[in-house]
Length: 107
Image (cartoon, rainbow, N blue to C red; front, side, top):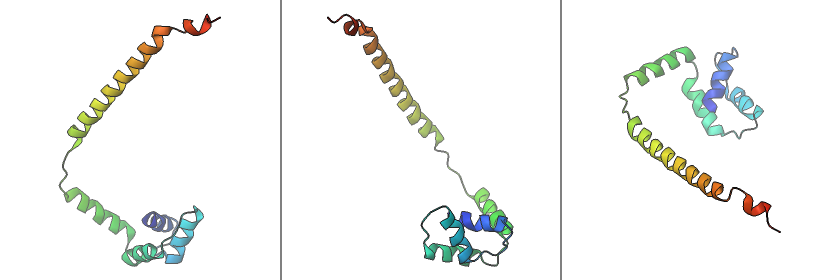
């Protein structure tokens, strides 16, 4: 949230937002403000061109090796979905066996 507030301030035309600017943005949404985190963000980005910082970050991300764990996650989520579907079918069968007649004809 601190970085987002800094970026919002720069988008609003403030080339070098202060701690006060960041705190004001965060407090407008009713969130708690950690003064140390605000100070760290301002210190890390003060005097830097935010577009260059973002471009540098993208280049670092593109150079990072990426491991694909999606096949294991997909298999696990598929198994969970199949189990849930089976439970739903069992519940439907149980509710259809009565068909509501036991409740209607009780005298």
